[in-house]
Length: 126
Image (tube, rainbow, N blue to C red; front, side, top):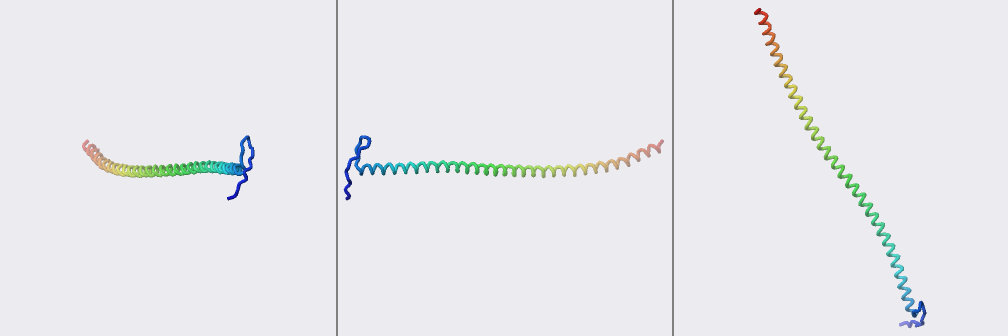
């Protein structure tokens, strides 16, 4: 084993050997590096948090747009169905109205002939 020189150094009233001072300096260096890495990691975590929040916001906007689009499609489908039903009902009403009109015209035509006959009979009997 290597012999470590056991000289004493005085620092702040305490006595350290060269080996002890070297170990303390190494520990300080390691702690300083760890602090730097911790600061870097803290910065990376903050960046990742920002990215995650931006991603979540973007995805929620996409989901919102999809839901709105789906709701609009369903509303349009319901509206189309109601329109088609109303058009069928209107067509049925027009058909019935036409049939009723034709029936009424036929009755009127028949009554006009009857009225003419009544008037002719009345005039002849006078």
